[in-house]
Structures are given as C-alpha cells and as structure tokens.
Length: 151
Image (cartoon, helix red, strand yellow):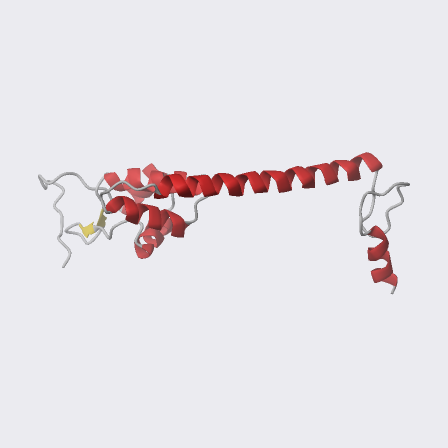
C-alpha cells in the first residue's frame, strides 16, 4: 500500500515528476521508464495522487545518466546499482570500467581506420562509390560495385 504524503510532512520534502525530471535533465517518460526497469524506486503518492519523489531521486538520475555517458548500458547500470544497494563494496565497477576502456580503445582504433580511409578518399578526389574517376581510387570495391551495377 502506498503511503500518501502531506506537503507539510515532517519526514521531508518531496518532488513531483516534472520537478525531478527538470532538475535531473530528463523527460518525465524517462523517469517512469526507469521506475519500470527498477532503476529508481516507485514513489509514494501525494494526497492528490501525484507521484512524490524524495530529493535523492535527482541525484540517482544524474548518476544513471553519467554512467550512460560513460558507455554503460541501462542493464549494466541496473546491475551496478543493485550491487551498490547490497551495501558492501565490490570490484564490480572497477572491472566493468576496465572493460569499457577496452571497448572504447577498440572503437577509437576503428574510428581511426575509418578516418584514414575517408581522408584517402578526399585526397584522391573520389567522386562516386560506383563510378569513381580518380586515377588511384582508394575505394577497394569500386570495381566490384561497377560489376554489380552492370552485371
């Protein structure tokens, strides 16, 4: 059973959905989605039936969004939050952060390769994926593309 809150409740202030969303920089749909996923607790209700969140919810949402910006998926964030809620320190965050560093390094290597290839295309003056007229086309499949178009 949900406990209804009185704005004058000595247990502390509460925030409505819009206030939490605005302060945390998310939209209200995100707030409800995180509730359904178990990332944030289901709030109590005000006497008028409005969702009543404790102010700490803003901090938790900020942490969730920061973890996402670091590359963690919502599932990974949920697991990390669950580990933290158990109240004993683990190496889980450190291990996962090291895995994310490896993923980032791999993406950087991929992006560096892509950048080099694009630079070669620009330098060579390529003008078409399938009918390039530059003398030393760096596009490896330009000949195959032409065969595929005509054949």
